[in-house]
Image 1: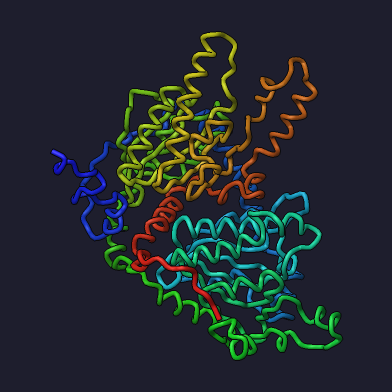
Image 2 (image 1 turned 45 degrees about the vertical axis):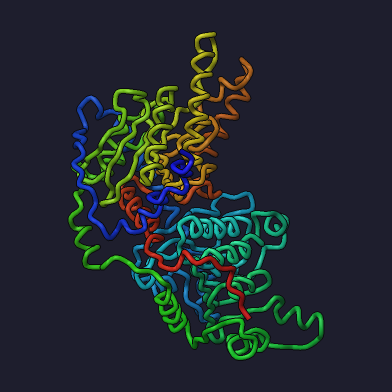
Length: 566
């Protein structure tokens, strides 16, 4: 008897579930013919749609203004100084030379706006994900026109988030270094803590050990702590005359020793390529440096799908039955202006097709399967208050997707405030709901599949955690411009205050109105960027492509320690 009792872990047929996905691209996908969501706009919905559309157009105007503002970087004078006196390329021109095309996913472009210490456009650095030699790569590119390339607390936060995305999605990382070091008056918010300046270098070491490739291009100053970025990257390229690496510049040398030395003599490209060995490739000009970088990236051990086959698959994708422009009128100006979330789903999925799961149970949460540009996904979407039944349904569906290795898309629009407990019956309902929501939070936290969250309306209270809010580490989290992010929605704070305290209520509502806006949130990097509703389908496609790329890397199995430089 005992000879037949093999341990489950020893069964010969057992194979880890995740190993299936690595070869999925080589096989034909299972055929699916999901039902079509036939949900046109009805006349009875027109007044809500028009109100939402007016609000979305106002948000679009602000979005466009802010985009123009951040594209100007540090302003005209700083741009002239950067290009004429310092003879350097602007950061977006550098990206044009480096990336295969201008179709890249920029992350948190509004980070750094409206902060207590002033506006820092794009947090002083551009981060995003673009293709280099056909490979999706994270880039972290300093913009030296903003405060001379000085790093502020928000700069560090943005760089760390980009590295976190690279780690989570196993993406190669390219650093375009042109930094003047930390802003000393705010050093206490930049230097000492765990998730501050030093974490950048810790992440570099961890990424190298995980076999996530990193390349640094020194195309400007690389002073103080910033000097460690190229020396810890696996390969480094440095540009003659404009690139420098040193802990302390010529003024510090003169103050300490009285010796006068030029930046080039102290830490120029020739010195580090020929003498110190801190860099691996010497470039006479920036274009040559980016050519080197492309060639380095072509040596990464990835086997990408055939381009022709990939193109034909894209052409075969069914477009939604309805225009993505209609999403502008489906983006709710407030919770009471929310239309059926399936109308949003039908404007995002291939052919407006959607296989709903538990359609008749817990109807305030919509769950089901769909395809977005050929990617099979599970969709979890708020369609009302996250009730006890809805949370149980959400837990079930999330675990189902995790078992089947299907990425999850959360469309979040949570209730403006928690339900009050005004009776014994309500107390029982709230208690059951609390337990069910706790189960859903656990399911979200423990799901090992990729997760992408799009806040289409409200992001309030504990419901937002169950819908994979920022604290639950989605691979990406985006906001529509109309979105609101706060513990409770503006106008609903009265239930949380003592009765008849109208002055305090009005004061808090004004503050919530300002602090809950999508642009306030994005300025502080509580998300990965504000996106337009009509661009959501394309951004989801890019995000899913980016996440999938890790399955094409051939050199992940052999464990190793980090790469040690000379």
